[in-house]
Image (cartoon, rainbow, N blue to C red; front, side, top):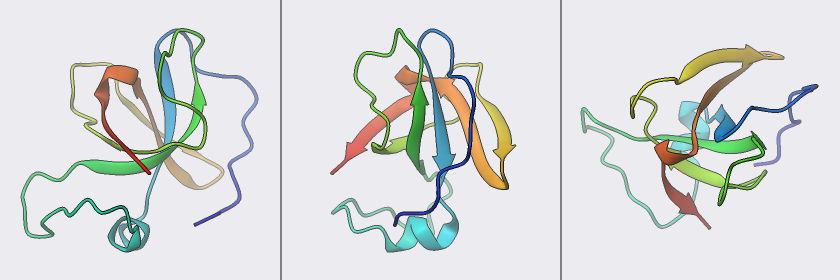
Length: 98
């Protein structure tokens, strides 16, 4: 699953994390032991943590996570070097995959 990481100068502020969203193909082929019903209306997003703010307590660069982009407010979609990414609060991370 190692894709080249987007080139980024800087890091998120405070308790924010920058996550690269997985493509549908990456999402469905990740072997984590977690099964998400493909037909469910509500599916968590999966991605890889790229950068963390200085107040983040648990998330680390390289973690693969399930996250809820609609949790609270303050989630922002962006593209970095063609990759779909999101900046959100660490509390929006629901599950760390191993």
